[in-house]
Image 1 (spheres, helix red, strand yellow):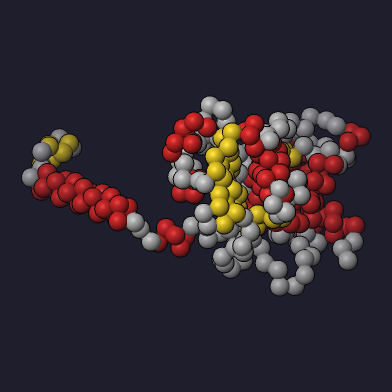
Image 2 (cartoon, rainbow, N blue to C red; image 1 turned 135 degrees about the vertical axis):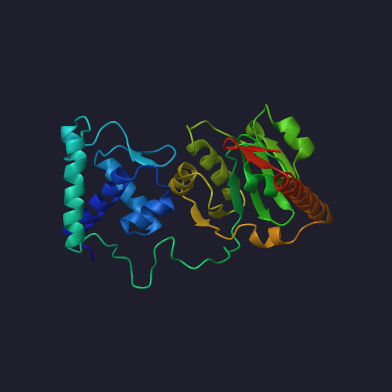
Length: 282
């Protein structure tokens, strides 16, 4: 069992990793801190309880205040605090106390072998109209929407009142619901979507889901916080994308032919060009 010193050393290691390289996503932060994703989630919650303002925007960072002694002594974050924390983290690392004490055989997130995820439903949260995973699954790009695939041919998409008419016309999903039809409740960024996903899954007696490795970390944390068991599908759509429809194959051929024609024309122009005063003339 991990003793108090080892647990403190691990928390310091996580916090030092956030400060030394802000903007890391969960997988990167877990690897840098030398812990598993599950351990990282627990440590982040404990750090927040202790008063460390760890937040996620485009990556994890410590915002505004760094409180080295817990909630009792909040003070403005200073470079001296960062230096002190880094020094402590380096000391515990040299002492060998920072390493994750997960059971033998566990591996860091980036070293685990890639495998197909289990049979859990697929949950996608759109991150903009150009979200490739969402477009591939739902057949439409939406600025903000929820997609759940329970099984082949059994999927749904939930979109806002502003988008639902377009979604109903263009999406390939079997069911298209507005936020109100799906029972959406406002609970703040990330958590609102997570609560809705959990509600729709629980209506079918489900408490687990798989997600894209490109899912925003805020949603990943929120899904776990609302009680879902979340599995990251690192091979999402890989097999499907290897098989092209006749139309997709035609577009690929046309794009390749256009690129080859462009390169041929560039080569022709360059072969007849000459250099004058350091400039290329054709």
